[in-house]
Length: 423
Image 1 (cartoon, rainbow, N blue to C red):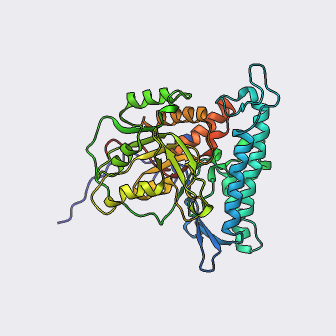
Image 2 (cartoon, one colour):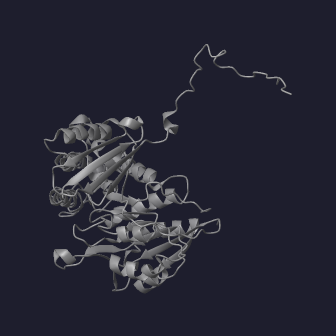
Image 3 (tube, one colour):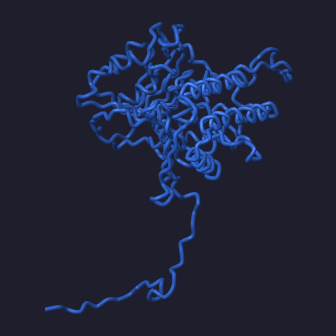
């Protein structure tokens, strides 16, 4: 038999649906960043198409796309020019009028991290580099098609009007995205134009394979490795970085290529973080065969093909390889050389790495060691994602040291990578 239930109203913010309940005060600092996904693909006719998905828009307005009128080769050329300009203007800048205490003919923007005493020069260079970075985007989105003009207006507007977007460039197009910029004339400070200063950014690709992973038992300390060239032990904060890893994690140190390749050849490599502190360079072969290689303390050269060969036997078998990788060696932030040859970062992702972070250019060693210490100190706390830390360090080095080189570090995947000892 039906029974009437007694109900007591203990909280009625709408007064019986007659008033609109008061909204809780907004806390901008606690709002989750908005997500923007940009997909760049080849069309059937060999051109490039671009699609954007903006998570904050209504469902019917969320997706927009267009066909690019600029070729892949032109964009690759623009990217190479941008990297060259960063090397020329910052890394290889020659001091023709040194301040007291500096040597004649030195490279003042590479020899120290704190560039405060060179701030007038740096501000001029940053303005020029922001214009170069905008030129890449400007050329990429240039064209007469009405669809492309609408896409350009939306995309550049979102990049300039918003801040702290989480942007995934799902693309095989190897652009140095953090070094690109929106129109610098829109801002009083040219630093604000750079995408890496405004937003969290990664490059990824839906073509990358899914890799089966074993779960590890929960652990109290992170498992890490330092893969290093011992000739760099005395550079900058290299010793501090090693001490940091030793104190905050269970650390394995490798100085020989054979030790690294043997580790990669094992089914279970339970490292949460792999740190590389070594040299990266391109071989002197013809462009189609040109390779990016790294070298530890011995003479053996390590490239993507060698890493893939060692890890490949475990690709379709029960295994564990899911580290976040900081490839702190020159050029290792690049995902492709513009040929069919993949670089180390793309291969490591394909084999299961959670993300790879590395510089797009020839990075000065003193700065690289300082950047590594700052990044690893935050990442090993487990409270921040790699995307959050990357953007924070761009702003920190710009504000405290007037140094733009943090913009040259780019993420291949890893935007949401966070140290998780329970995984």
